[in-house]
Length: 286
Length: 233
Image (cartoon, rainbow over all chains, first blue to last red; front, side, top):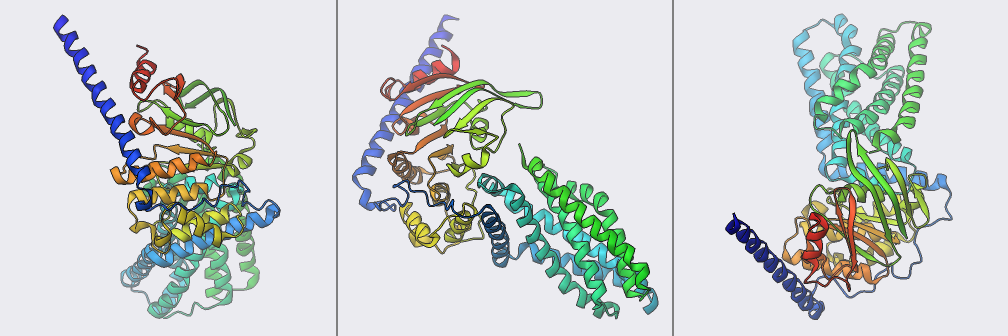
């Protein structure tokens, strides 16, 4: 028993000595570093921030700062995507595969094709959109950049709107490529101003709630599975209304029948954007 | 500069910080030491306004958290485990982005000077994903100081760095401290912090168990001081 305690004390002494040697080495290393500063990659340049005259421009209005932060986030997302093309290529490949699979699986005649067009289109947009939303927030989360955004002295809603508009731009790019490809494959003219309006309104609602839920889901381990599970039930009213309005325009029904769906889409957009604006702060709060 | 009174932080049923008191004067360099799981990172995230206190009072530069978080963030620079940098942007683009988030003026000049200061001026147009861990950490410090903060928080800045990169980071940290900024740095590496910090606080089981200035506890006695604070022996 006694010998075991003696061993323990010896072991602790040895660890103490090793740690002291480490500290002495550190001091020596630092001395050597001080002596050879001209060899260091870090220059002896006077820091730009020693005079304590903050470069932060407090004279700018809060709205100007808000817009500056918002545009900075959009610019950052677009610039990063332009380099990596990870998000857009994944969304596009997925969307094109979906419409190809539907094309071969359904084998429809011209009239039936027109009937299913809006459904196939919105299923394609919804699935491809989920991929994009997941990837967009994963880039922020994986390198801790979401913390970097939250550390900035800006209203957090500017972060939400910046991310939302960025995601919306990616969604529009995918839609702009999918529409002509779909027109060719299904031999259907999709370039109807009314349909384009429905696509814009539907995408806004989808991305508004999607960006909020993606921010929530990205903080969990099961983010890839969690986002569609959370998103699809919530976004179902938008998708159903958008399908109804799109069908109306494609089948050239009377505008009086389409207006209720369009109005409903606008209402959903306003509600989803307002809810996301209200809850984003709570979603990112730890 | 920083005053924390009876800070409690809970995650669900788990209490991480248990009535922590902490005070830092302007210009002090405090090394926050402690074993893994002591609550160092949680405490730093509360100071950084990334996490709200469950109870207690946190005041930085005269502003209360979380009520005046935006004012605190304006005066705060934070370097975390992760670099908070975008790999698909260049060093310059990363700083430009953060500069715009902080509404800074004269960004071109400021970015050039800051990059030169951390020794990355010649890599300004390279993508951050091509940088080594040490270079990313230096760029991370550039990101944290570009808006001229009064207080800088470092969370284990030496994690994953090799000897050369660590020595270079020592140099950068000394320069940051020499500017008279208030620094709080968490670490469990006693050897590294020994001659950098002006004060050593030990955080164990959610409270500060000991505090000593560099003159009071010599480099040789730091380990014994730490052991006593952690184990109570």
